[in-house]
Length: 213
Image (cartoon, rainbow, N blue to C red; front, side, top):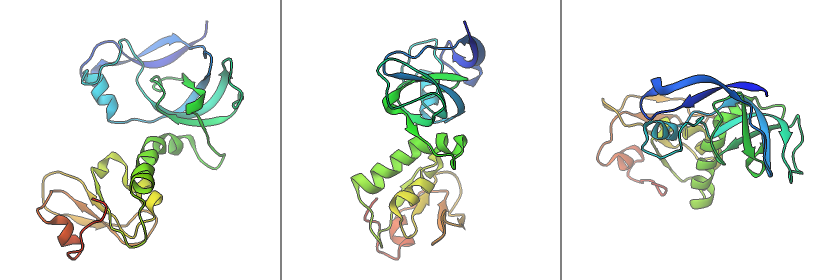
């Protein structure tokens, strides 16, 4: 039986409870693929799972987002072949390991031009930005959008999804409004805000506010 290195959680608590272990390489079931993990996404939901705020069965290998290469496929999988480069978000845990079994329907092909780390980092944030800026409220030219909690890495994909003219980035924390930074992809700079302020949107948009709050 082949073994692999995985990060395992046996008890809820702090990050010290995440331990590297040798475990068997999983076998893909029907409708699944075994993926050699080249990069795993790290998301805040995994903190909740680690602490027990969100219940997950223990022991567990965390990680619900990643990118890598298909090693094998289970029964009923026709759209994937060994050697395919793929990325995924959701569909189970297990990305904090050298190999993971993933529902084939969750796997997205990635091109040779995209490295695994970028693909893994963009899946969840990209989908979040897309449904907010395209599906829920289709941003149009001239719209201004306030992105809350941009420390969650939503700013760049939100800009790409909406092609907005200059979103405002709100990062709560101590201190006053701090500085402007170059906007991802060019265009107007992004304001990094370290404290929520009454009338913030009106102040920063010349009284026009944001159609997409």
